[in-house]
Length: 164
Length: 420
Image (cartoon, rainbow over all chains, first blue to last red; front, top):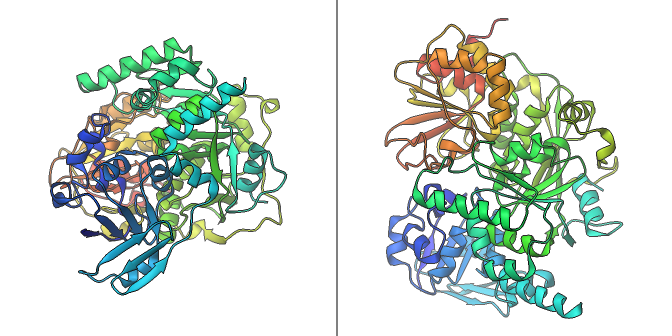
């Protein structure tokens, strides 16, 4: 598993250039352009299970969801950051991409450290240190457990129909 | 309770809420633009089976890549028109009507005390008239189309008190850029931002400019109190006071942070590449050569903005090495600016006018930059690659700064041309 390390304020144009927003919508269309203007080596070399470590305000900017859809599609296990921008955070819940807000883990990371995630226990270990991160509220976990917002919504609609 | 707490309590069916609490809300409107095509493509079977939640819930505006730049855009626009027709949607604004946020304002779809969500980050703009509005992604817009409801977390609130008056040559854009420069691009992450203080001096146009950029400091929403200025604006677009119920923060509301800005101490500023919070006094960047100027967008493309620019450019020529692009935020703005003579002044000076929409702001078409070029823009983002080229630079400023700089071919302090 590789750790991709980036700084503060990684915005949506860096994650997925705006010029493709209305021509690329599917995961396959999105993948080759992921992080194109930030790190051209990312799309070529990312593999399933990799994680991203970043600073403050990851995902700031546009409401475009291609960054989240793309990171999920290439198999990013989690984005760990000091903080996230809110539309990106919501979008990650909707797509089932794991985001971990853990400034201590970011602070502790040294290049080459092994990173191990334990989502069920809410912990992340970086090198020899272990950090816990808070669980999501139950309303949000319900969306994630359903596999994302659309499966959650489909189930809700089915249940509603049964009631009437 | 703060504004956000009060409105989320109302829409969440609670008498009292506190930051961190999650409420389920039914927004009054759901905004979508060209991205309505990918949104509806996610839920075709469900749309056939269940239909849209309410025909007057969605507001669909074609603005991002208009007129279609390529067959793919044209096809998406066609799919959206068919969707609107099939489901009998009440609010659809086709190519040329304007930028979605301006349309929502002009058509009276955002009113004091209402709640709107939209699949665009600048949905936060409607706080200009005392609405709670916030951006969401496409997937959430798709779910909302079907169910009409979603969850919102009650945010912490930040109060920004504006005191005193602005020096000549300094505008609302300089105020909001200065605030973002001070608080940083993450300074209001997840928070509701309330502007207060000596706000009566700011028109709805100017409040729109400031609320629009709330998201550039991470805000969930940004809002102004409803006052005589708001009421007069809404009356002017045919919305009487009986049609809305403003929500005001309680006097004893708790704010996570309170910031006070003395407006008389703010000068013209420029956000330099590649971050909106990289804000510098104009004196530090004066003389930087520019090849393109963009005057317009949802941030600064209203009649009052073209008036400021026309007053500066009257009798002058745009510098031969500069392309000045005008991007009215709506057809109504375009028409009004034409009638008032502002557009002819700007065209005589050498400007090029683009159709009302998002144009070069997001780099998909019209006015894309070349490597090594610099653009001085009244838009809201200067991210690397934003105008279609990662080797170009974008600087953000007020319409006055852009107009003066267009004459000189380099970034120029507008106070130099202001008649005292």
